Amino acid sequence: MKSALISLVILLLSIPCAAADTTWLPSLRHDTLFARATPQDSPHIIATAWANKRIISTLKHYAYYMENPPAQKQTPSNPVIWSRQPAASPRPATALIDLKTGRTIPMGDTRSLLIRAYEDTVLMLRYAPQPMLEFTTLSTGQKYQLTNEAIVNGAMSNGLSPNGQLIVYYDHNAYHCYNISQQQTNPITKDITTDLHFLYRNDLFTSPRGIAGWNTQSSRLYIYDAFDLWEVDPANKVPPINLTKGYGAKHRIILTVQKYHNQPKGKPLEFPLILNAFNIDNKQNGWFKLGKGKEPELLTMGNYQYDIMNNPYVPDQSNYPPVKRNDSIIVRRQSATEAPNLFYTKDFKHFTQLTFNQPEHKYTAQLTTYTTLDGQQRQAILYKPANFDSTKKYPVILHFYERRSDGLNSYLKTEPLTSGCNINIPSYTANGYLVFTPDIFYTPGDPMQGAYNAVLGAAEYLEKLPYADAKRIGLQGCSWGAIQINYLVTHSDKFAAAVSASGIGDWMTAYNSLVNNGRPNAENFENGQFRMKATPWDIPDQYLKNSAIYAANKMNTPLLLMHTTNDGACPFSNILSFFLALRRLQKPAWLLQYNDGNHGLTGASAMDFSERMQAFFNYYLKNETPPDWLAD
Image (cartoon, rainbow, N blue to C red):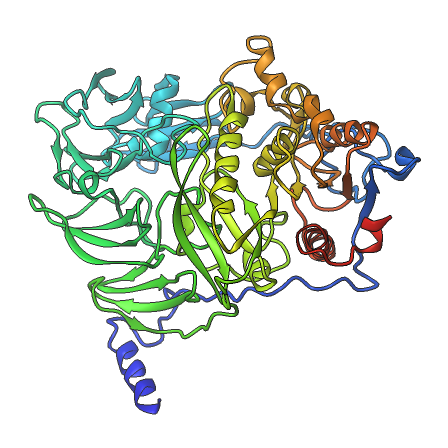
């Protein structure tokens, strides 16, 4: 042990940097459990069952989401929509000063965001009255504005060349290059026949995987297709070159130029490149090296998670961009059974462990494949207790939110709630549950049918496992997951119990609601996560079909609803309407209303909901004694 410590010290001292300079080293964060409620810290909750006679008298303010003025700590007694008013004095103005001539050039108000200078030209991004790029010639003060939305977005998304003369942007399924001085544009990827789109959320929208960067001279641009890296001539004189030679597509590995934690934004690319690698089939993560004209060289790849780049499905804060200084690199490695630890490397091949955190819990995570009701093969993760016994029968909780299988090697920390409203998987496996997280793909215009096909198919898969109790399968989800649960329990009696947190039940009224500080919710339905791609007036039958409230009379599954009165994403009034419908129909539903939090819970309320949710599942899935609030 002592010799190992000495070796580690010698290793750290060999890093080529001043001994006293440790500012570049990452700091470790140690997550802790939420504190339990104390007399000074009590949960803000009103629990309501479907059989309560005086339900309205138990409820406090719920009408609309509000943002309270900073000086106002209590929720107003009446529904209001509060917005900040501009100050009496005009906004402070900005100006450029030419240090050579002393000339002052007014640049407008402080809502301008991006200022970059190139020789005699300054580029600024403005937001009023619409997003635009404004070019100012310092020697003359002359201005030129560009309002094309696609070009503006391109400049903000790594499409502005290092010399400030070119803007590459994506439009109509192809990349184009806009020459600022010539004010002309031309397509530059017409010879690329592979798919340029992200694989992630490809049932939500089709967007390009993006631009990797430029060379120093601004003569070459590097872009991604779904798996590989391309070199493109922005002048469109030299044909595009697949730098990774199709290796990513052939091996189902997404290759991405690795970004470092302390790397300046917009830094030109220099070869050889380090490529982050993620295998979408087996979920392995690692790195390759890419030299000009060569096939990618494997450095390391394994059943770990280091940094799965640009992936919306891995758990929050489980990724960790490497920290680099000179040729010394710090990476973080984890897996479902291995706590996150830091490692030192110079080549992404050989690693020396620097920290030795031990897992605080044990469970297993198994990647599996199931078949949806409509015959599609999908991936899922089956989480099992550490002391799993295949001869026993276990209750199962189906927990879902879009696609979670990419997080197979994520280390899940123990806490009362995950993300403020979801079950904590390690806590449930430790309590004798199996947890199954199926990937779900959605059909635009009818997303809940995709959820139904996936979750019912997953349930049928579980029913065939000899160690899963087919009569004790429950559902849990939050937000978009909760919305699907509300639909599922009103369209199927397969499940023994369900918990829905921070969702909605009526799509028609949710479409015309205000969310997130007064923003209309319509965009989320037409072009966002709801995936309707049309208004309720275009496809009214589909909005009604996907709304749980209009099938509330068919629900027989015991359902626990949780919601906060100040929810900025899913208005409390919407879920209250759903609960009142269930109450009127005498369906087995309970509503936990919390008057703190927003779209989720923290502190004492998080602990309270966590305990109530587990008591609910323990009663319906494990036949344990119900708590008083549930029995009454």
